[in-house]
Image 1 (cartoon, rainbow over the protein chains, first blue to last red):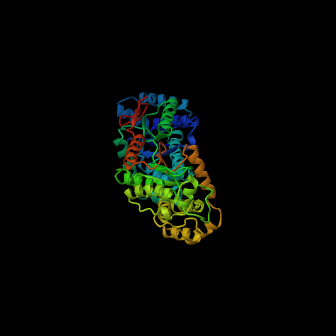
Image 2 (tube, helix red, strand yellow; image 1 turned 90 degrees about the horizontal axis):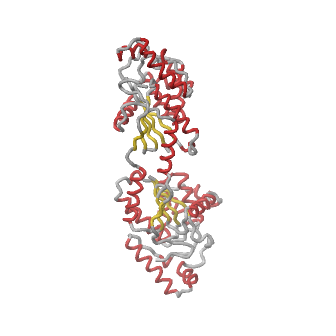
Image 3 (cartoon, rainbow over the protein chains, first blue to last red; image 1 turned 180 degrees about the horizontal axis):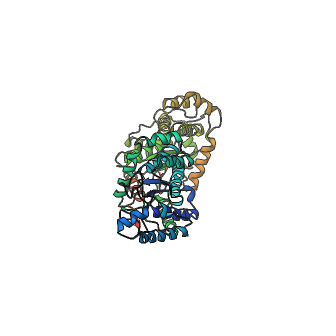
Length: 234
Length: 234
């Protein structure tokens, strides 16, 4: 069974949704047969590659709120994240572009398959939300990506090029074609679309239903001419 | 989509069923996405490796019929095969063991994947039914298998060993666990079991139904918390 997930590196609900899906997979009896593939989504493709402000300042500006109002918005998300075991440092996070981070997530899939991709995705989310690092900075990206298992020289080469930028664009277009305007967006077994960070038990139910749907008992189609232990009757 | 087929090299309905499935695939719009995997089945595991009689003589003996009666049985099958474009020479075929032929079909899958396996399977069926060759004879097996693309030295090595015999046994056990007592037996997309050489239009219907079942329109599961162009509301 395959799970495709559209997600942005700087999307808090994406990280929270990831933990809830993982909790559901932790109790799913066929978890060993589940493959997760991460797809790119950029909430703000126009965000600067060199950060100019914190997300708190950006939010206050964007929604016409006070600094305190923006912090309150972030505190609410931080509180939910804590319930899922994630110690967010949202107030310290920077408003940055994620194109380069997504290009490395594609590189990881290309080079090391789903396992390496999953490690790089988790490392980038962790660096941004738990350590408040600048995930647009090439030195940071290099350090995070190599610690997750990517080759440093290859990371440098990809960051210096526009390699995998077309993959990012294609992912975003595919999300839109599936009707996803926000992330996280999960597609379970090409059959169920789950929008947003649903509770773990919702994921559990969908996993179970998708599995049953794709592994039905064999339906037998009436007997045709065949050969058996007693020969080959016409 | 995947089609698993249990089949014996000396089973006339298996070859006829293969042609009917191929006819159905010829008009199936998603044929390029279909993978066929051949599995072993032995109708008579006790058949001699050095043939001692023709299948006509064996049939007459087994069913207590006259030589003419056995020929009539074979003529009926030959007539059906002709309708599917196969010029059987059943009256000349020999009663032989197919273990070694099946071992080579496994070797082909192992070495060259489904394409090479399909070529070797077809070549063996053709050699037996259209040319009435002894498909237990190692020289014949070598010639047929290498003409289909297997490496001669490797064929010799495998024939001189018992390599892939366990794969043949495992295939037969799996067929029994699926409830197949005769062949051909087709499993379409792990969902539909088709027993026997059904008409091509039955295969067409099952292919269509299996495809629809495994490619349903995305079912959407209600909206959870997500980030979108307008931010990350709690």
